[in-house]
Length: 208
Image (cartoon, rainbow, N blue to C red):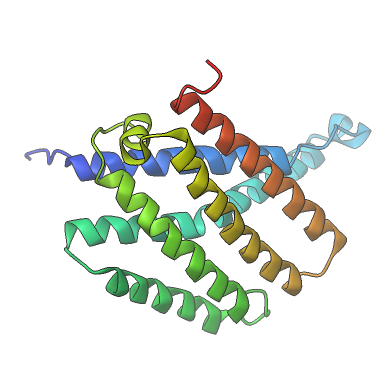
């Protein structure tokens, strides 16, 4: 059976998704820390296994949630290039998907306000990902430098994205009104900004 080779667009998609997944995992590790072992963890293996699996599952869910809008936007940007779709057509498909999620939510966790803020974030991300996908280069660093040309231009985008993500988080906090949720959001936002900046400074060779 003949092996189908990936296209340049496929390679770029995987490179961007891999970087976003790496960011999500790094933020997750900064937000959800493994608790110190207790005497019961040491003396009763089953308790340790239960706690560890619950911890790992929590991290996996957090990572998937962090990637939700990023993956929707990246797939939309790929379809716009591959299928010649307009942005409105790509956004309409995302609206349909999030509308279905909203309709199926019986616990009231996913609100219309969260969805609206996510749509604004996704709109911004689609333009960003399309810029990367259409730039010269296959690896993430090359795409980034060729798409934005300078640290200052990319930093301006990061500022816009930060505000869009914060609006989503504020909407979510109105649904989950707990001190724990507020603390987690603060840690997540600080970690995201710090890690993104460090990654970008490395790509654009700032302070080197």
